[in-house]
Length: 66
Image 1 (cartoon, rainbow, N blue to C red):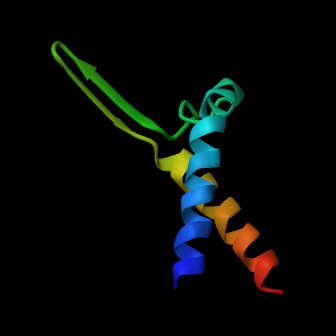
Image 2: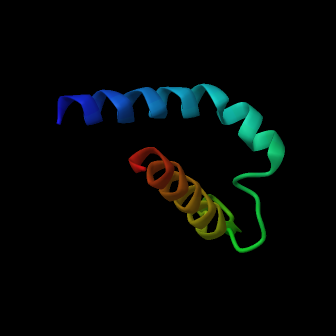
């Protein structure tokens, strides 16, 4: 269990460091991401980005399990 927590922590740190690069690639502003802006209020829900990130993480974990 501790090994998994450390691995997940390292992955999160790496993603945090790579976030500016990922933002330049367009993640976070894909078609399908909801962004509602009103006076004094902004709501953002990245549906498409979440699906893509989930698929990539699933693929990486599937490859490492083999």
